[in-house]
Length: 298
Image (cartoon, rainbow, N blue to C red; front, side):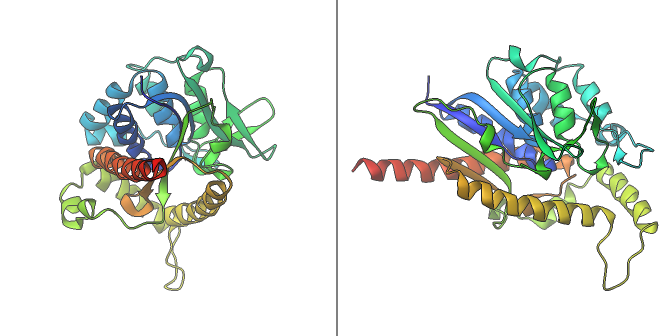
């Protein structure tokens, strides 16, 4: 077996699909993932991998009819979120059965945030789907998860790169994947014309939904940021600053950066592109890591 890896996956909405490509590249190069810690989309992808269902999940993302994707958006009448977020997870259970975290073959941690108790919540036991559901509850977008005495939302509010929960063993490699990196989009993935050509009915439906929200939230020319943009920009800025502090405090052996501008938070129709971007980013970082390791041997 290859060298053991403790893997940390950040949140980032649709950009988190790149985690699939990173994991595939890790395995291709002979690394053995023994531990995964994830927040939001990182918790979802990491959980699916821990369940041994990555290929099924990826194929589902690739082949799912775009109109059906929109059909999986279960709109909520709650004032705490626009979307329930349960429908897509329940659909996944048809081909990815739930399991207890403590019964998985690898160490797994999903991170959420309790807005009542004002603290992080790390799921290391119990239903993996319950853990994922709490971790992906983007504030004001996806409804939070109520507990006996708390209210859980997206873990990225407090810890979007949960390195502090990474299980470590002697001789392992700490690999961190940040899909919100402030770097230029890789040239081979930067064709606006191609992206426009691949727009789907799903995206148009989502845009129509956004536009309806905008009508109820008219802005002036000096304040042109709409509802979703304001949420994304505010949370994104917060996560970016926290990520900087986390990466300064912890020094991963390999840091894999995926550009923040590679796709929008809700651009799930770009799954294939994001998987390929994850592979590319991983190969790039692995190459740099090997060069450093080789130079240190001399």
